[in-house]
Image 1 (cartoon, rainbow, N blue to C red):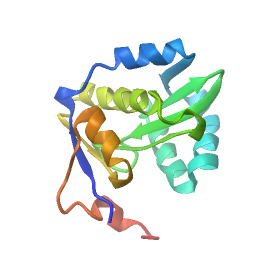
Image 2 (cartoon, rainbow, N blue to C red; image 1 turned 90 degrees about the horizontal axis):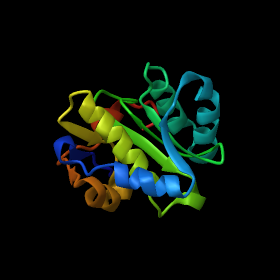
Image 3 (cartoon, rainbow, N blue to C red; image 1 turned 60 degrees about the horizontal axis):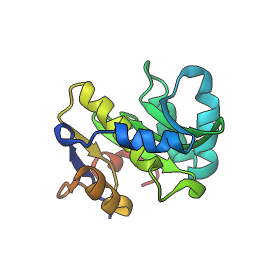
Amino acid sequence: MAHDFLARLWTLPDKAPVLARLAEQGIQIKRVIAPDRQRVLQFVEDRFGAGWMHECEAALSTVPSTCYIAVKDKKVIGFACFEATAKDYFGPIGVDEAFRGGDVGTGLLLSCLHSMCEMGYAYAIIGCADDAAAFYEKTVGATVIPDSHPAIYQNLILK
């Protein structure tokens, strides 16, 4: 059973130090713009499947998009979305296996959550996050939302 988590946006850590460390490694975190849409969707589908690709597609259907990517050597190495499945929801997020364990996921998460805070949200819901609970708890102090399964995902055709 997967639970949703809640993150307080007014207590977020500063993203600048993380983005600076990534830049030293030649990695940029940037908001996706329309000309890169297909490239990003292909990356997500190839590595994480059609379900996440469709959520990413929804995030890319807004202007500005609600999707950030990590790029190294002109190649997408990670992505994160917000407001893809529902308002005030963060996710999905995925990082290429070769780049996991560093700051890429943290940079993507903080970029998205800071954008949500700038939009006026006080909290962000992180959907179905049990697999990465320790990451969200450590990085942004997220906590489990009791009785949050299956939440919005109960409306999936193939649940």
